Length: 571
Image (cartoon, rainbow, N blue to C red; front, side, top):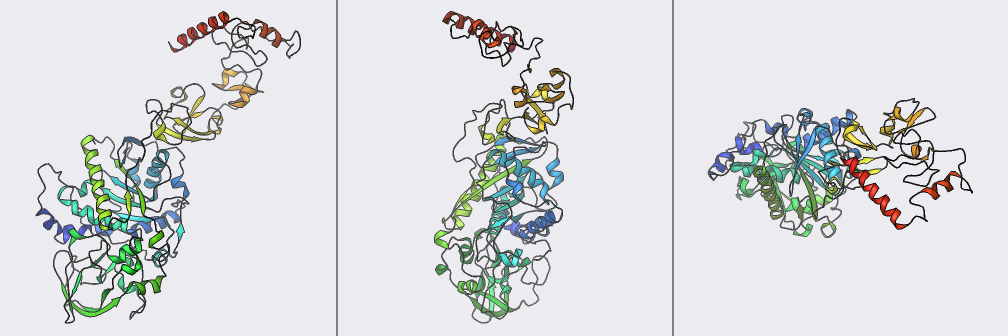
């Protein structure tokens, strides 16, 4: 595997190869937003190689991209707020700048963003794409592979394994696209190039071919993961060129950035075209470039970027290649076309700057941008697959209140809860907190979120020793130790309201377990506790307004008293 960062995505071609000049000829209307300038060094910070390098460094540092990324642990990073849920984009605010400091040049930023995403949505996405509201300096755009279950793609040459799974989930990989504003207005063509290339890296370009003059790897170019400059790969976003054979030993390029999509070989590798529909193509071997230089001032070589800015003529020998030559080298694609995956779900997350002024108009702009990319991908793949960027296939009604059971944050009423939190007792609708007072009775504040008081996290916050229930907050004192939850319910001496007599209290109606009355009239506890004649329980039942012998009028009076009690407590 090449440890050098991938020099990919074709974006700089738009800037340095005159593509931006071509694009500017299609002048934007006054309503179009002025795009951000493209960093001149983007090419050194782009591609699947960057993604692989990030992945490898994370493993060396002991923080791998693994199953923890997709666990719905319901504990989002404190510094990330969900500010908008768009039709096809989840919008977060980096409210303390931690994500920007962590950068998408490493694992840390992804870890936090995915933690929020999977606390809201189930594990159904094949890829997750991140956009930012700032220009990431450590990396420009890349695809980071996490899983591949398809044989015959050549992943063995790239990562040392043909089939692998880092997360044990549906997630195949991560796409980083950087600042969305880079792709607006007259730079729309740049978004086309980058998006198609990065999503295309899910399947290529890594394959070799058989029956050639060498080992078959010469059809690859930059970092052995893009097509060679000398390969005829008609309008492929994964590079190569459109070559015209002049039938005299010379060849001329005719590559158009505005027509970039996927070649027939690309579509076969993606599972969107049967192998018998892939026409032969060719590679120019022994090229004589006549001293010509590419857009970056280097002598034209296999790693050179496609010739967008001008047509280039070179000499060489034509080496015909068939898809059968690729299959001989790599084995057939498995699964084949008939059983290949045709529906691909991609979740997009946009991370805003701290204090962002992002508004409704900006959201519409981003949603439209994503709509364009979705439509473009399906058009360039001949409408065989269905790329789904929509986050909510079925609207979820947020009707669960704070403390209610939930399966996703979308189910929780944002007026009372902001996250579906995973606890020792299951997932519940919860919210952030600074102290227990913000959570209310029966909850503690731990790790910035409200937890039910019976979970281990809350137990760990209790004082070690106590002399009475008052020492334990909402817990109870059992044999000199503070505890909460079931232990308190099982303690016959526990009164969570700390009433002096522990039984009858006209303010709260609490009674001990030995008194099965729940209203007034329960006598003070006596040693005579049991179920026989003359026991406290018998006395309680006789005196209780809820006794089976109690007339309906007594029940009505108790109900009115209860309403008065509720009113007093809410006042």
